[in-house]
Length: 378
Picture 1 (cartoon, rainbow, N blue to C red):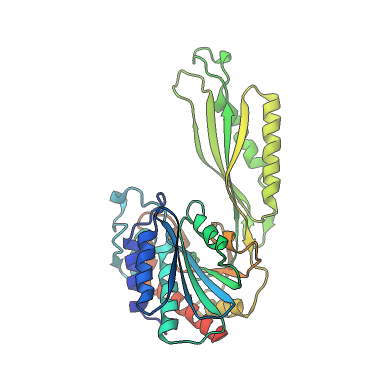
Picture 2 (picture 1 turned 120 degrees about the horizontal axis):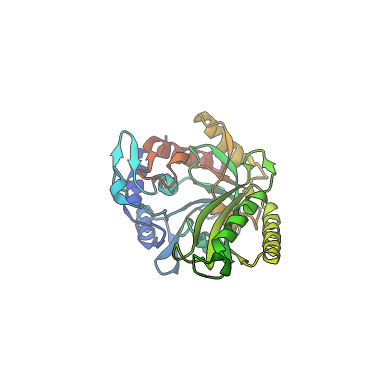
């Protein structure tokens, strides 16, 4: 074991203590802390502050032209009602081998591990045939603006592999679902609740449309990701019980197992809306507010095979796909860069109250990444 508990766990605890809830998505304090950590071993860092308080950090080790990127996001979802937490969300309390707090699993555990890996490479003066880049991003939880900013500034040039440290319980993820978020807006006409026939009920229009949203879910089943899904996550409409609602909207979260399905779903939605507007007095508009591609590893090189073997040795033999989106969807598609989604943290700890990560799993992950880098490029 090259990396010890003292190399990684203090970094994790301090990162949890720095609030990076999104919204508002401020990461600059966490970035400045990590710059200090890297500078302790003489590692140069770049801060990419692309909006007020929102910043990425890029740290590099080595000087080769080809790079391996280790990436994780610094922002977290909000803690919610802190009174419901047994362990305060920003104190990083340790209990029975677990570190509790917002972001421990998603995904400050992996970030701390990556930082420890790069520092240990520098401390040991390991000579590698690839440059190692740590990319810590802002805004993954909402818009993925941080990873897009890094890509615009050329971070993917020369990259031959991306390790995305999202929580997988150290299983090796080779695919992720794509995302399509749509707002359906129904416009009716108000009237008194005692004379509903004089109005056009927008909520009733929504009730007609929602089943149709589900009917267009593609039936393609992916061997790893399974089937595409839809969640109607939010609905709002009306003013008073005795007023015919003139407006209603609901929000659809499609998760698609192949990027080839994205245009199909958008076209199907357009057909549904055109048919509804032709046949009903209420009128409908669609707004797409967020979309990211599904991605899948297609080139399994020696680096991947070594990583998979290390996971097997750790008792994690499954190759998996993930339902959630990652910064990888912003970074890899244009370049068709090989990638893996792998990190510490249990999947049932994503975004929950009393979120925790296992201390040993974070440590194991750091050593797996370190060993794979040294064995392949040392």
